[in-house]
Image 1 (spheres, rainbow, N blue to C red):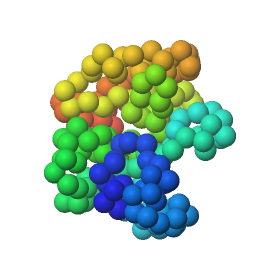
Image 2 (cartoon, helix red, strand yellow):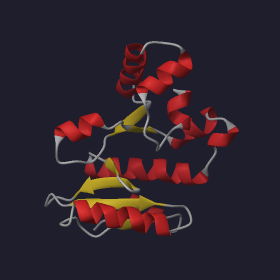
Image 3 (tube, rainbow, N blue to C red):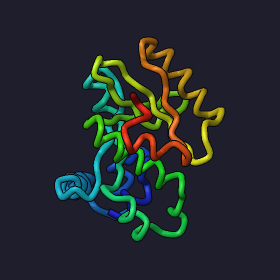
Image 4 (cartoon, one colour):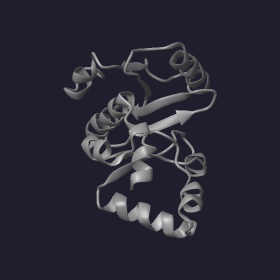
Length: 168
């Protein structure tokens, strides 16, 4: 659980965890499934229209409560941006049910689908939008030209997202 919490917001390889712990991949998968069933954390799959593409990419994981992450990670894991990303994931999951991520040349932190089915890319950064976010969005729009306008979440407007105001 600690390894998953420290890796919150990053693609997580079951094989890498198994190697670090010296156990079988199947054992790690069983523990991760048990932790998801116990609502310690949620998986965030890769965004693609194809189920095969979703299945071939690793998932990212987010704790059910960012306070749990804060008390269990090492000092290197105390990143305020990660806490904002975790809180954003939970707010999006509460509102949309299903939340994904996308990565190619860059990463789009989250992708949700509006009621009309259009994907909405969501970028999260404590300090606000940066060049890398725009590069990732450019790649996303090349791949999904009919996607809705991107949403940027930062420390100043997170409260609007939590209230349901940021995504209309």
